[in-house]
Image 1: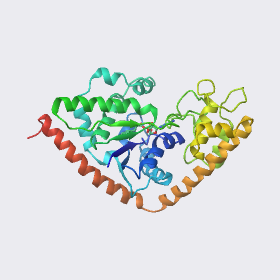
Image 2 (image 1 turned 45 degrees about the vertical axis):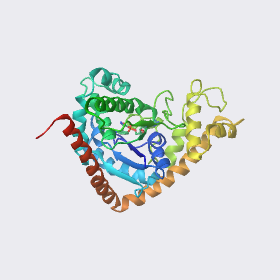
Image 3 (image 1 turned 90 degrees about the vertical axis):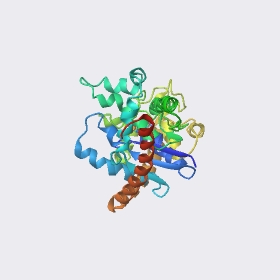
Length: 326
Ligand code: TYM
């Protein structure tokens, strides 16, 4: 059985972008593939975090994966920092990655431009991500378009390592959703909806209440044409709302476009808000139930046990091949 693996950083509250680009694909493939989903908490500290908030978000995120439809019986769910092999292998991979290829990462360029003193971890972040993937011989890595370059780097590192030391790592492939690979900010639809953005007005969080969701959607930036149609270049705001609508309504973008022929933006936005509220309230109801009992710890303990065993085997194979240790 093929294996999929993905992670969502606890660097901020999860958004509908995290759901549509990240979690939804895991849910889609959980019957077909062996599935691993984890919380990359070590990635979150590549930028400053409040320790208390970070800690709270780790379990909260796991509860949100499950509330969104990730079945803990069908997925191995775990925390990155629970398994020391991730960082151990990352070091070895760092020694097999070139400055040139790591310097090409566009996310590093974007994120580092915000710092006067750039944390080194922000630069080596994609190599830790390669370790997350390669430790488990993942066949597919479901991600939004922003993470595609990182998965490609993981592929390049694996190919180089295999060439140098013999067949060791499976070469992973990114799985990018056809619809919703990049959900945009509602206030600035030319940029990604990001959980680490400080202005919450353009972001719909999975735990936003009904009033907040409606307000954010009704005040989403659009254009002056008053025609609901999909054209991400000329109409990024409307196209983004159509993508969100199509995802939650479980229809195609073309079907959504047809539904709104002749409708004005007010009517369209109200319908988008209705479906987002309906679906997010269902997730929130499940989330509240999950947070009441202790099943998350049981799930994470099981995940830790399963993944540590797999990672240990792969790590020991690597150590032997490169001549480390006794
Ligand atoms: P992160 O936490 O930024 O995002 C988690 C997943 O959600 C997707 N995503 C989006 N998709 C569409 N539109 C958006 N606005 C949007 N925002 C987020 C992301 O593409 C991603 O799939 N480095 C990763 C976490 C990670 C990881 C891994 C992922 C660490 N190790 C190994 C896969 C495999 C990250 O920061 O994702």
